[in-house]
Image (tube, rainbow, N blue to C red; front, top):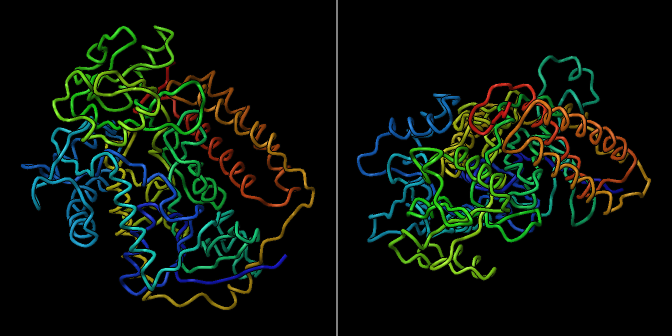
Length: 529
């Protein structure tokens, strides 16, 4: 097999909001970087799907007020310094990059007079939005800027297999005996050529997004399988808060089939929509004084409780009852998707069900995105900065991706100007990928069955409501599957479906282990026992 090797200053794995902003920030400072995406285009992941919006600032808003809202939603399990950084830097960075530079078309009455909405857990209306396709507008502008920048190389249809580290992949004794372990790039599968490339880099940024696809019902894109979590875990970087998986209360229910579900934004409830059962009775007041605008974990458990009591497959979101605005104009995407399943949101309630939505844990990262593995950064949803604590506040995810994209980009640019290029000794000591097996026994039916095992196990045992019995069962099932996959993986030629399955299984295992260890019910980690 032909081997392709290359070396760049920085390798960025993932091309959502965090990865793209990080790339642009350092490219503007003269750093050459390579961005890889598993898709055919940059806007392949979850960032593009974000409907609700991005946190800005309300009239009479103060960073302290937003800080308090984030900490309350996060059950005070947050890292205060990270929350403070988000609240202090967020609005200015947003103004500078998204409004002044990229001219993202957020809804406004007249230039500079923004429409701001409120979502669950926020004490003020401070969320900027572009109708109900904010993420799409942001990613269109970011993708264009990244693709056109002379300092950025974009490689498509690339799946990262493994992070390269001096301890695990160097053949030179100097690096083996060194106490410090450093990340020096990644092995990457090129789907265009079916070869594994050795992409060496002085710094590496993980921006691989979420983990939703390890669950039966999710709002996440097909690539959201936690590959960054699995790779960082194997490389020895520290992970944190992996038990905190946020379920979005309202994904469109269109039958029992699992897989990716269309998100019905929280902004619909922000504008006045009410959750009702199949008899049309509003039920949220029974569970929380904030009713339909309680934080997501509370709303999700309330919906599950109602579904268990009534035996129904879903509940309903009644947008026709209280919303005074033209709903179709305010939520064009949602309206169209509902029309596709013959639901008219102006007169009928929308069938909804909870779905895995956002990963509050991840690879532990500091205020600049640095991880515990030297020269490895993590930004966006795959990182754990401590901003979200035990439960994420609505519309803070895009802002976190933006802020840490900027701080990581600046930090890397500053460090690169002071450090030497990668030594020849190190470069030559990193071996190319060795394909272990040649048993051509990859069977799509087996792969689909393994995914079904992962998704059903995680949904039923490590889902919205957890207990020692359920978690123990999940742990033994996932451990068996992981071992079988390990053996299979060793003997079968590498392929995209295999890499994805391997990463998905490891991610599920890591989440299960974290959930088992934490006996305290908090936020998204709800212990029924």
